[in-house]
Length: 133
Image (cartoon, rainbow, N blue to C red; front, side):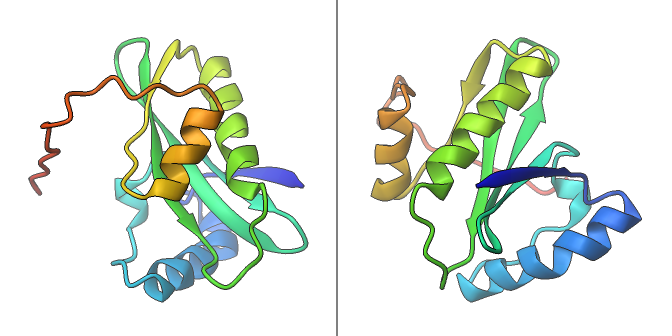
């Protein structure tokens, strides 16, 4: 497995990666995200073809946000997500982050995060709200 870093705001990366990511979002029934909503710190795992991707979102503190996970719905992704999470953690450390926050809503991802040492410290009654500004 290898990981490739990309920034969808760069035309060459947009042309290379966005068609794949857009298809993945659509295959899962999600609205494709636009590059202006995604971090410039994206990673995609290549294991005999692209399998999964995620991003490191920086803040103005030691905390970063790892997420906006997406994968090829039809691919064998054995160990790809764990590999991606570990690579995102390395990237976050290199970017100066000391703590990561990661939202997870499915049991498979939650189990992978816990296996890799991520703790569930949030209030169980907490709901995330978003507002388009």
